[in-house]
Image 1 (cartoon, helix red, strand yellow):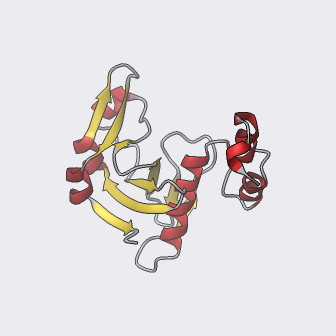
Image 2: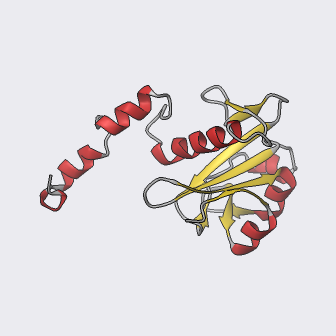
Length: 164
């Protein structure tokens, strides 16, 4: 197949929910919605934790639970945000009033960074205190997010880094 000769519509079908790869990832339980980047990140994080003896085993939280993506056997709550670059901003944290009041929404925030080929590049683990220190308010969206900076990357727990 000469991909250069395909129309935009034909290219879109290759990455659409009807594509063979998407259907296979859905059948394997990796994708549950159309948020491919976010769900790949969640899968990579949970899989990495569950296959690392020194890390707690995680299970996915029930669908629809806000700010909670995974739970440890000890009841620790994990929020997982995925980005596609070591520079940029994580997804949003809503309910800014409760965050301003420092009402803890999770125990750990995992920031999963994937590369241009959707492979795992890095996993960072932030405590609630780390999150509270690095959060930024987005006035336009009325929510909080985390900007990935060298300072953040160098000051929080590095769980995984692809060095290839």
